Image 1: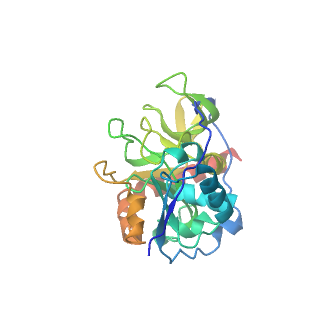
Image 2 (image 1 turned 135 degrees about the vertical axis):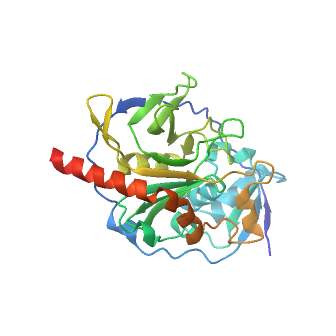
Image 3 (image 1 turned 90 degrees about the vertical axis):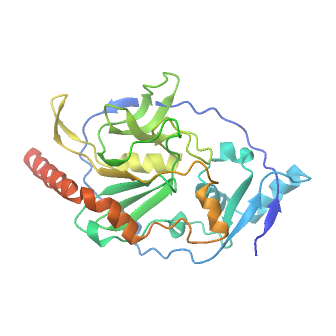
Length: 298
């Protein structure tokens, strides 16, 4: 049975203007902490509705929300709704698990393991339909999180890409007033990459892949850049990135479907395998090339 909790949350608004001091080399070949490789036990419960607008007393509603959920639980709820705290007051409704864990991992829409990736050290998937990413190491999912990808007018390109250069702060090539923090480029000519930026709960970017702060920082440190010879020649590609699927802009946010079907946003093993297969040979070839280059430079 769905629970409807009516409240209005007071949040300060913040204009997030973002963009990068470019880095072109790194030697981060290490994998994530072993804790990230623990077995994921996916959430098996149901989801309820939490209505943001319509509370008779905003202050008491906010107090009740903060009393009901601690800070970590609130962060999980926001992530599940692809929204940051600065845009929370604009939301009509949130989807909330009937048992709110402080571990976002248990709510992953991606398969915890994909055997076809056993020999791939690192790879990142971005799902356009579900506005989510997942990072894998040797077939094991080590992290997932929300994203806000391109609008209908400015779609994010799909297909296979490789992590190129990165910068802690980068000025956008689209608008020089946009400062992009923890920027990691994946398409150099078009200027597409992932970075920290506003997460309003729907695809809102100018083709890039927006992330929450903790995810942007984590991917910034975790993924590998390309290896260059001089300033322009690519000796080895960085971490492979697959962006896949299409977002249905004519329908409600897909995570709202979890209210009727807890598995509505699931990316099955078969689905992910189908997205991987056309690119696997190229990924393996570039991986072998990178390993040779890294060994030569030691």
